[in-house]
Length: 316
Image (spheres, rainbow, N blue to C red):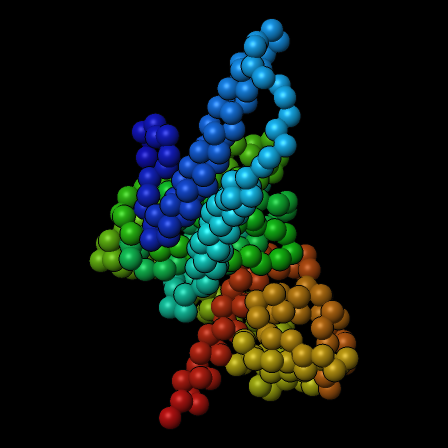
């Protein structure tokens, strides 16, 4: 981890593909740079002041040379473009069976929450050979979470969720960095990602397991802040039920519809009048300033868990 390297380690399933595109672009650029510089140097010497080279204008031209000069670079450029697009789509296609981890960036640290309830600061433990999806937000300014050995990076924004995934395939310790200038101590906002063998990760997870899971903490917050008074089974007010909400399509007062994803749920908690559900009055108060980003992640984890339970009950 502390050895000097011209390029970072290759420690994820997608690193090889990304490196291949990167080096292909370098090779393509280097080839034409050398070719053009060589031509400039040749003509500068041949037609320098005082040389006896003929300067008469040639009236004839070669259509073959001109067409070849246009088509060959264009073909190479389009080939690299479509290749890079394919890799880009692979990098941004989130696996369904990935291990979820919730991330909060804060000046100047990274806070990670696991579904088991375990929490880490500036360290992240993950299993080798299993995809991991990070759902991220910032508590203050724009950050950018970067794993050089995995060749993945994603901006982390306040009041918004972004996602990043990777599958580490080589156990070991690697750097994690902030790649976006975020203040005076930006250069110190880093840490480690520790990739463990699956059995070793299971033992680590058992030792780190909290008294309550992230979803259980979300349910506790749901009751603690009085949400059950409106959204619970025996609610005093007419409000939408939250069990099984995640991933469903919700019809709004203005007739539009929206999928109840993480962003929708976050907005509903902090900006309740933004997307009012059809058939309900906009009377819910905002919880901005009362809930931390970690609290909101916990509430979302609970709502997601109820959706999973609903699917299990509905399954034949």
